[in-house]
Image 1 (tube, one colour):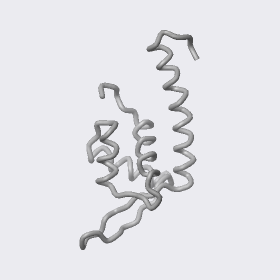
Image 2 (tube, rainbow, N blue to C red):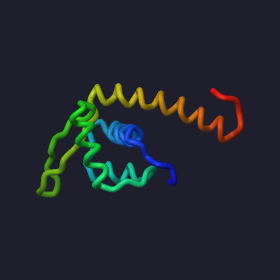
Image 3 (cartoon, one colour):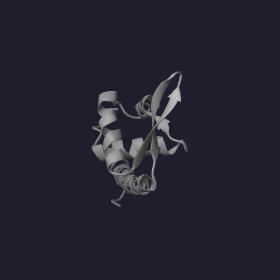
Image 4 (cartoon, rainbow, N blue to C red):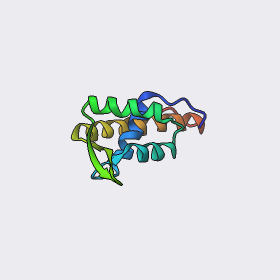
Length: 107
């Protein structure tokens, strides 16, 4: 993708990815899922996960996997509310951009 990824868009994508799994998901899988739509490194993603946790959007727990602890991230009710706001903002934003690209009227 050639477009610059802002922090809000990255937050929204991370919350959307984590919200797909009711019991949460682990960091490496989040990275892989986010990479399906955005070019992002692990060194970029882990600070986002920490910030979303600090903001109350994610909760974190460890779970045994293959003899090691794996850190899982689960969306909270605050995170669900934030994701809902992001979705609405994205819908409006993408409609305006599409209108410009397609030469239609301003929304």
